[in-house]
Image (cartoon, rainbow, N blue to C red; front, side, top):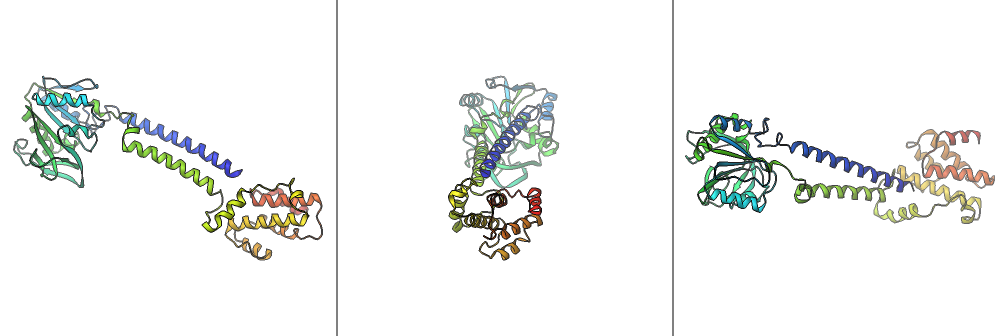
Length: 395
């Protein structure tokens, strides 16, 4: 009964903890899901934002436009579309519109820092892979984006662009591990970079990064054109809980946690250590057998002596498992081995039970009930304190 109650209490506690944890995670996502907090957002004025890049474009005479909804698309009057650190996937309709716009003469700049969403670079026969070692800085190899000279750009990337050799112009990195690659697409071009760091407010402070993005802009658009920033895909959809490895890991972790506590509370009772396999059957049989109540005692045993022997042996087995001693010892040696593990009051109770378990002088019915009640309390709940101690003194 105590194990069952403990199980239900633990189960309720686990459910409450999981609900609170889910609410904390969802609240954190909502907080960091705002445009002011997203990495690569022109509205983010912190180190991870690109507000300084947007301000520079305005100072150079460019017009800024933002794609803030799912239905907005770049148009014929737009020169460059920047998709910086996207966090949600693109629909087939969105990808089709982007592809048509590029083929009509637009320039698409993708700065993606991980493999998700995979369908965006995949539309242009590319992908994002993880590096074994991070790359902190790199030089530009081709002159298109290297005039005026960039020098060394601080890119701080842990990923690279997946692209077959000969199918892209490698501006940064090498053929095996491109870091900045350009693809021709109809009348337009697509630049894919494995990091958004050079565009951020922190990254633009590096001279090489500032010169790189300036060269990229001036090489693909003229002053007065519209520059477009994708803000819609900075949001993290709630469907990530069911559609991403992170969400699956969260649910599997919750199921595993619940399963562990169910197993723990079912097979390992409170206050007892796990036992070897050879003893499990005997212990399960003992712990699951119907308890012999005082009302059943006269029907279970023929004499008072049999009742006392039964509860005394039951008490010895329980204390032996609890404190790691040998229950087969003689009573005097058994009590002596318990001294390091029990306090004075409990030891006094055990001495009292041992002294009065002998058949002579015979116990009355009320004395037998009192003796058995003390043995049961000491075996099961271990709640013996002041009441039993006072009884010992009066007895």
